[in-house]
Length: 179
Figure 1 (tube, rainbow, N blue to C red):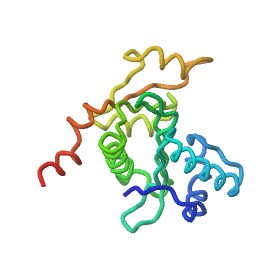
Figure 2: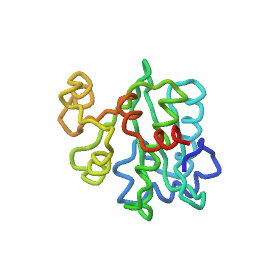
Figure 3: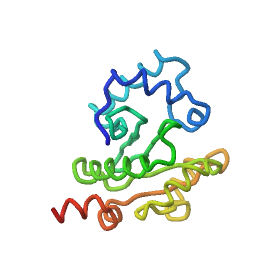
């Protein structure tokens, strides 16, 4: 479902990324394949330095369909960025990827809080994240961060996932513990 980033998958990911239904909502907006390749190399270096964790999202046949990253990691807290190519919208990959990624973050990397900033007009992403039982709208819970991500105007909603909430609500963890 997810794997460490690999430069070999950049070509197929780039073609999914530049789709007009995806591109406006991605964190890195490369203007060329070479720029995307460079950004991916940078993510790999940042992961080695401990400031981000980046994974490729795969479909059931092992094809790359998007990416999921935790960036700006400070004090066991970071921001989540996820995108999936349009042919894979609405097929459950978002939740599967998040469950797998959060399991890794909370159990293997010692992350305590994952923050998600989602554009208020990005209804698709807001609906997807609000389906997850362990996600909390944090505009009022974390006013400092909410104001920080909306310094010029209020364009983002802030969501957060606490380690304890994920572990309490995660079907993935409960299944692993049962087996």
